[in-house]
Amino acid sequence: MSVELSLPPETRLLIVTVNYRTAHLVIENLRSLAREIPHLPPTKVAIVDNDSGDGSVEKIGAAIAAEGWGDWATLMPSSVNGGFSYGNNYAIRPALRSPNPPDYYLLLNPDAQVRPGALQALIDFMDKHSKVGIAGSSFEKEDGGLWPYAFKFPNILGEFERGFRLGIVSKLLAPWRVVQIMDQTKEQPIDWLPGASLIIRREVFDSVGLMDEGYFLYYEETDFCLQTKRQGWEIWYVPQSRVMHILGQSTGVTAINQRPKRLPQYWHDSRRRYFLKNHGWFYAAIADASWVLGFGLWRVRRILQRKPDNDPPKLLRDSIQNSVVFHPDIPAQTLPDPTPRPSGDRPPTPATQTAN
Image (tube, rainbow, N blue to C red; front, side, top):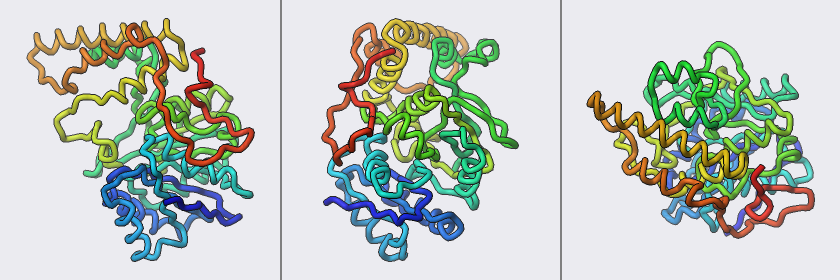
């Protein structure tokens, strides 16, 4: 079943939520949006179902009809589960091709619920700062606690710090540490932000293209932010925009208060794709070695200090086996194209990507 996305000419914001078997979360997501929509510039919401096959389409469709959300919410079932980039592009692509494409595009996870004024804060910030291509929200956990993080781009020293996790080393490597604790009192520039609540200016797609569908899940927003910054755009963290995010519920990989699961193959593929595509084999190999060294030292320290093992099962073995040393080519998905691409639309594809 194919549903066409209809956008009135005055639409300024398109919100895209990608669902895979989380209908109950999507409905709560829409409920939070319903309280905000009347106070926003003309806004449309597209819910892309990535071939859930569990009744999600029927449940979400019934909720939209019962709650009277049909004026602003459109359910777009896809026949393919192509991952996060694929799902977002499924709605963004036809919006960009419309006669009057929206000014802004907000990626919003199904396990996110917007707080009052969160979306208007992002729009106001983007309206005031024309050099900013992407901005993102601050997150609350389900218990009301803050999740005040944004990120630097992955790098060799950052990979060592991520593996070793020793306080003094983390302080010494702070300029390269990937995870950054953000000030909640002011807006700040940053390298990249989570795709759970991320607003993108239309012109970014003109200069960068759509999101890279070679990623199934993870690293796609990191890559997109990197391409955006390489084109001269700024990326900012906007703490005045507050969104509640039930961490990991849309993926099942990074959920808190649960025993860690073994990282899926697509996580390793995405990480390898990111380093090879953007930095080449030699840099990627050093990054792999840096993380393995750091993590190996951490394991020794954990055993000597009798610390609990809170890492995903078989993490070291899986990481070594998925190193670029053994897999030197850029991993890619082979997916059908859901809609024709117009000339000039330049989404990155496995066939055209090369390592820099």
